[in-house]
Amino acid sequence: MITSNEYFDAQVKSLGYDSATGKSSVGVMEEGSYEFGTSTHETMVVIEGELIAQLPGEEEWKSYKAGDTFEVAANTSFKVKSVGQTSYLCQYK
Image (cartoon, rainbow, N blue to C red; front, side):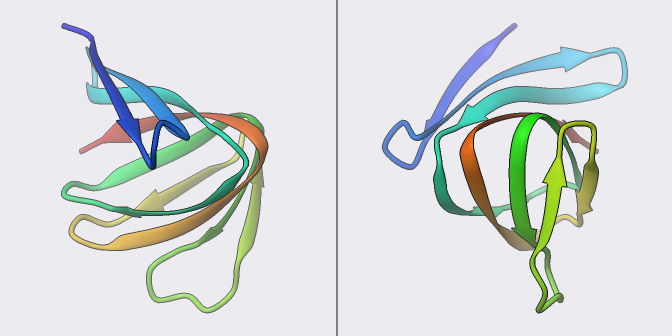
């Protein structure tokens, strides 16, 4: 079943689904800054656009563009800045 989610006053929208490898979501972020909490391990893949992320335990911000991936452990939080509209794939473990 496909689920629809909206966050941050509909500035981030995603569709969740079950894939052959587990739960995933694909979504789009409007330009802006966001902080997400995790309950499971997440692998984020930037599909189009750019995310500048500050990952847990890191002080530096790093840019991720189309095709780039980053991982976030369960039960943590991370910050991102979307440069323009950015699409992403998130895979959960």
